[in-house]
Length: 163
Image 1 (cartoon, rainbow, N blue to C red):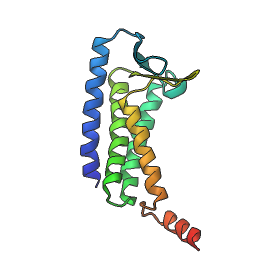
Image 2 (image 1 turned 120 degrees about the vertical axis):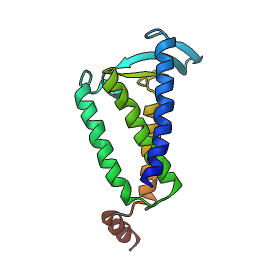
Image 3 (image 1 turned 135 degrees about the vertical axis):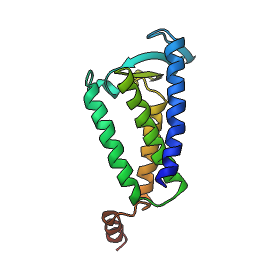
Image 4 (image 1 turned 60 degrees about the vertical axis):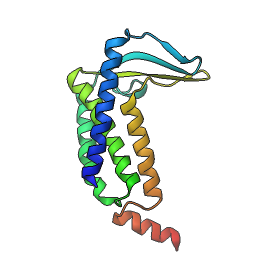
């Protein structure tokens, strides 16, 4: 299962890097291109932190966190049933983590380019890697709720809930 997830992660990583390189070479910094006015825009931002300006300028800390998260998830994946959705979920998370990790190691920042506005709320600018991470974790949370993780704690918790 892990091998299949890593193959899928490689696909996500390649797509993410191709798009980031294209964005970096085509658009000017902070140029805003409306796709759907008052909702969806493309822009180019160099992000040396994480979402919502957390850990700004802490590239080394974010690199270490990403590496530790990858190690933890590679081990944690063994607890999950070998289902297509779980393979995709872990592949999305691995690919997203690796996409942003590559940026941080090579450039010292992440290239973000998707901007969403909903009403007066400005979401942080994000990229394909960020979407992959969020989508993958949503699928993993769903898998845990469905009981597709095989670890002992989850089994005991499910048995107590069904009593």
